[in-house]
Length: 284
Figure 1 (tube, rainbow, N blue to C red):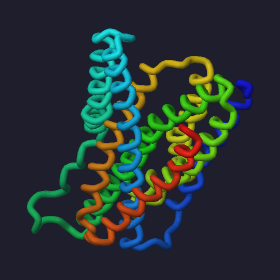
Figure 2 (cartoon, rainbow, N blue to C red):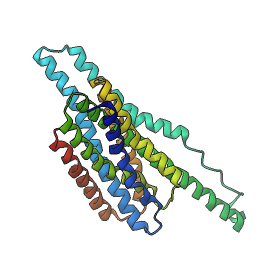
Figure 3 (cartoon, one colour):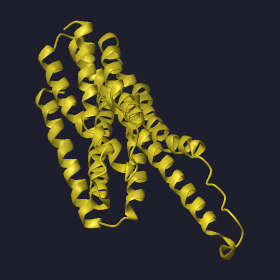
């Protein structure tokens, strides 16, 4: 498979994330349906967390086994283990630090005592609160897109490496599997938006942030085969996904529907497993 064909198929695999994004434009969904969609997204993200961390740990485990067999030194295994931990910290605590610094300040209240607030002031307070909630929802959605993008970069690396080594059948199955997988990831981005209706420009940007790295990863993987680079992206994306799960979970708790939400989490997790089985079938 040529470099151009690999890049094209990598772009197609990443582009399927746009299938789920238009759901954010629908105004027909009530609070119950939006909570369900958000919790479904958590289920998908939970599977992605398990998936990326298992891949990352497998790389470290292989290094430990290589040291045991005498084919690699102890320092190599320690370096990869430290990279896994540092990357995870960067994706979780580091992302939280960045998000807190970018968070706009809460606007100060208008007027003095509550009895002095006029109807006009009350409306202004409501508008300020709505704008703050709107901005926070869009920021959370874009954070999810970035976390998924890190994960998809590692997937693109797998596509590029398999294509460059001549394993065309494996590369094809990986592309089909990742395409199905990325379709569900679109729901992971828009689910937590709640009743916020993003613009088409925002949706396109989120799709590029989340799906574009599959395209970039396929190019890098075709030209460079680096286990260390792959581990780093697995670690950072794992930490980022865990941070996002906590943010979305906390945001949805106030709406209730606990039992429904947990069922939808389980469904999202199962859908993640089902789509990933296609990749496992091809040996990815």
